[in-house]
Length: 268
Image (cartoon, helix red, strand yellow):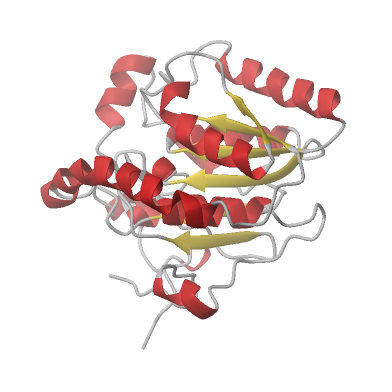
């Protein structure tokens, strides 16, 4: 029978015992170009999704990535009628001095210029920024959507922690910081994750379900998640909800073939 993924609140597993994805999953990250090809093939279908309401969306790239990597996602959302904005800080080499302040300033600027709350989307490490901005500025943020973001568990349960320490100059072993990152934002939050993620242990991306937090499992690589058609479908579905009327994602009809939510996903 289907079972719910481990709930961090109930300690069904020990975060410290998690391990980074194995070599096979890491090798499977090579399928990312095929996910982009699938996005191109699915474009006519994706264009039939509900039109956006024009509210601003700020997109944060992953570790070692820049705005070029989020261009397909932003272009897709722009075509649907949203007003997307890149993070504009070059390559994401971690929360070095001034990075998070600039993120905070950008959220405030977009909120003021559009006179509307801002939706935040973060890919991998970028999702940490999105969640932290929502904690700092809950009155400015409409919702948070993360893609393969390791916001729970230990940072060493990824295949990127050494690279993070190298480029950021920071240690991942910071108990106070880890505790801060695990706190949930006080706004509607969606975690999109993949059991075949080759960079981040998937359990590190599972949020404890609540009236304002949900998980959506897709079949995707970590590197290709931001251009995977199923992930983008889920992002567009979440953004299309009327402001102030957020409801959890429900995979009904044909959606059941492509998505799993906590009530349907199996633990492995």
